[in-house]
View 1 (spheres, rainbow, N blue to C red):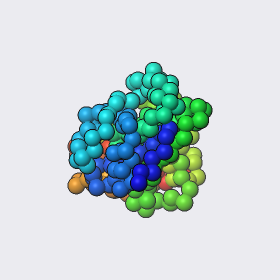
View 2: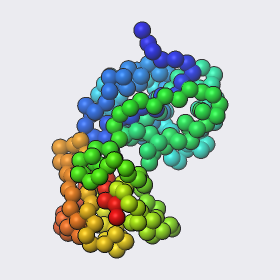
View 3: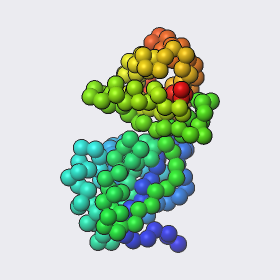
Length: 227
């Protein structure tokens, strides 16, 4: 018997790389809802096809969520059940999702977030750096406010976690050295759950040398120890 209740928004984590990293419950929910809201329908179609999920896909991403959020909530309030997914990981963690979840809560539409894949948790735990207390920063601003955030983060007494593009990793490490010093321990994790996964923990200058000497690919998580 189906456990889907109406109306309902399910926030469903999807694999960050390895397609096996999805729960049985997530697969069932994606099959049972009326609509799957996807960050990129082309990316999500590959996942749904892999698990023979035929549910209708609809685009819901950072460029249209402000315009579409109220319409989606109206549909949910009228009795539809939907699932929100991102290209990888848990929606709302540096991906679209917050606005819709907030709007649903304000309108009395039930929101349920399934546990599942997200990049920063395995990176943090595998880094070997203290993780009993940590600060998740996500993506730094590209320009305005970036140095202010780095200054703040460098003074934290506990571990902090960043997301970064492979194209900006070297610049990021250079900036972290400038703000945190040459002795600060850090970890760069990339291609998590994939064939060429790499998790390297070392002082920041050693990480800079390592990643300057090679072509960097994949999504990047940077974990930095506290003061």
